[in-house]
Length: 445
Image 1 (tube, helix red, strand yellow):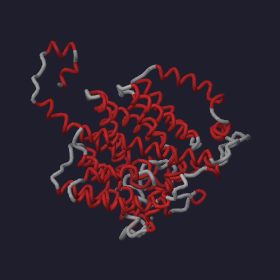
Image 2 (cartoon, one colour):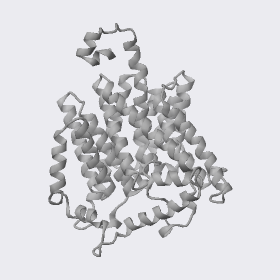
Image 3 (cartoon, helix red, strand yellow):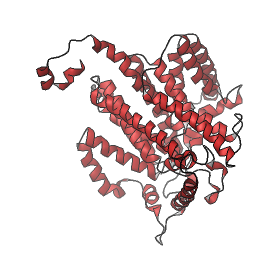
Image 4 (cartoon, one colour):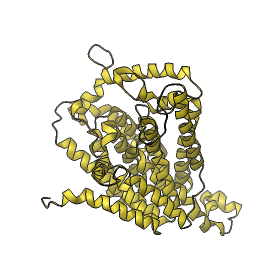
């Protein structure tokens, strides 16, 4: 805008974190929770905090302040199996690192400067955001506000990603031009995963909006996000969006299935040439896998051998990055493979339990809530988790706060809903059997 104010935005945002921390501890943890939401995906903004005292840890301090402030002022967690699963999984992963140390696969996780300990600590920020959401979201207004803030955060990510993409020439595909945009450290595929997931969240959520203006604004956000996803040139995100649209068509709006079918037959005439080139790059002219696809296959073959060596407990959480692998890569390029290799079948069961409970939470709200706001939240979460499952087959898109921080904040709001909906129904007169037979939803009144 030419005002020069933009230079001070990171500093003001950093100072705002400390104000939010104080407010959270002083009795307004919900305000702190609202403030943190846009910062969860915006890594490039948080990177500016490194210039200031405790800048590297200010977001962690804010999350902890929200939790502590909520507990001090009598807030309690809602009932959800997800909390217990996360607690058990977090403890198991910590002791798994010591197992990796005993096996000689990684150094001892003694302090935050140790790479494996830092990996574990950063991962556990996700359940902490989930805990914070569960503690402070206590009414319908808070649920609606969390969704609105998530929408605005997505819009700013879209704007930043598109400005970055549109500043380059894309007459042909060029891998060197891809980057993580506002998600920074998560990389170009991380940005693509974030956009794909939340395009589906708001597409599913928009199905339940009643006011025409609100619905159109929501769909405009979805269209912008899908457009931004297209220019991330991530084949996994393309698959996730198409799969999410098919699920949306199956469970909510069958007309979308027709649109998807038409698109699948005509996509080469619609999308830019660079996108077509990217999709067709899976194999080269001689019929062999191109470099990045071949890397994945080689990594999975090496990971399979490591899994067979320690199938039950794994080689140790965060240990894979310390080994020597194809092209010196430090990741398996498949989160499910990574979980099995590092934490074994036991860790795999924890991961499946997490995903099952997340899907169940969204599905229950979608199928059984009477309020369209809660139905939309549930359906959006269900589609988002389904997309996440697909995306994590092509890389670790699960452990990054930038990609999934907002997802866990929304999940925290979702598990809170029964505690402020149930009291409204507890004193209602039970309907007669005949009334329930005519309208089964009366059973929930």
